[in-house]
Image 1 (cartoon, rainbow, N blue to C red):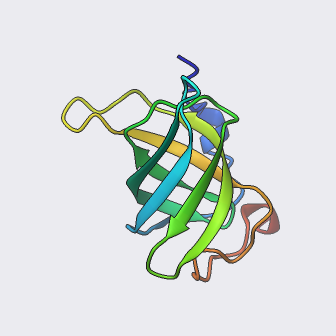
Image 2 (cartoon, helix red, strand yellow):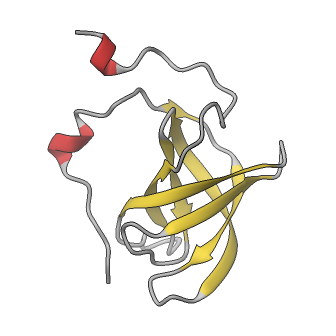
Length: 118
């Protein structure tokens, strides 16, 4: 329901590099059935513009989420870009999220954007 699988062509044209960074975060919002939730989740990788996280909840593309980093007590708003089917072993779904108006949230120095490489 509402899942969006990433287009491989679009993935190859990402705006910025991804960095493998595993963080425990707290994500809250409304799931695909419009039920409010809050759950601990894990980042898979991060970029200047967002992250891939593993969520138990099914989400709709375009849904807004709040993400809290307990290690820094910083929070930010994100929009769901895609969500993969659940993993058979864990039931968690790799979910692509993008920032809604935030910069420097991860505290990581990223390589220059790919658009600047040309």
